[in-house]
Length: 399
Ligand code: GLN
Image 1 (cartoon, rainbow, N blue to C red):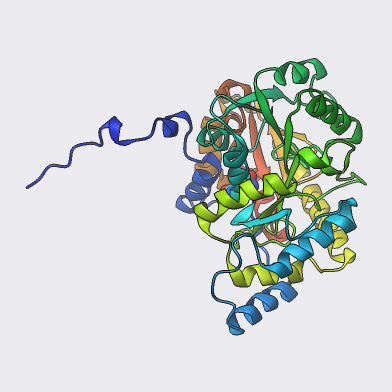
Image 2: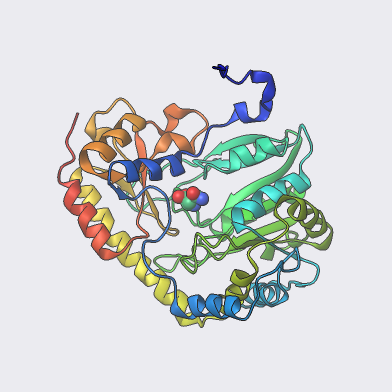
């Protein structure tokens, strides 16, 4: 009988000690374990548009089953360039300025690997989507966090301190990661805020790497502005987006980065050796998706507004204080009225005893205590799922 000894530490990369497994995806596993309603991980539980499912079926039927060009199928790159012109007025050369990746997740890490050197710093607003920290670490860079402070009034905005941001740009800064509309806060950065960020990027010669995956999910007339469209930014911005959220196909894993040619070349090289390419038939379906009419996006945003306005009152009635999102499909909440020691304990209680999975707030902060009285709910769910959640929320009790 041979004994397997625990893995000695020297087998492992030091890098993996600097981050943990995804808490969001762990909560999905917890939801399955406890048969809970999953309002943790942000994926829709409803169907994708019929046109695009048909386009994917037709592509497979038509034998689009081998590798696409490593940096993306021509039809999809053309559609991305066309859409960026149409929605943001940005001219994009689909031959030289687009890399299609396996989701915006790969586009983000491929970009960071392509631009960062050891010792570089990357500025990230906090609370942040949990991937950015590990992405920076894996690419040899150090994340430097700048606080987004929660609104003080129900109609207020999450806001950053200008001086704190300026200070963050002064440490061997290579890039800022900008996620708007923002996960988890629902903040949509205004033109004024983007101009301020632009001024710093230009002054300190820093890149902007944007995550615009929630571009089309906006409420109350909020406008999405790609920072690449501001004077002085086109040449220093990598704009990242994907099919997942706009077309409810998070499992297809098709995303992209748009950047000036020299940066695109570097990202293409990294992407080629990371994954070779994104799924070929789904890229063809992506070209169909990006050709849907403007009414599709209006309808998408309106349906998300209804879902938001369905979940928030139910949460408030149960005792959560909600930070009303202006975009994306999450609501950050304050749980201090329930008297739990921290967010992890509360999330464990909610999934086990109430039957609802949420994401503990601490996973969006560098220091867990900063998020210890917050949890995030995703409302990208069918009305009946939200009804069932509202029903279960009656059970929430103070500790
Ligand atoms: N972006 C989604 C979220 O924040 C899904 C994350 C993921 O698991 N890729 O929940």
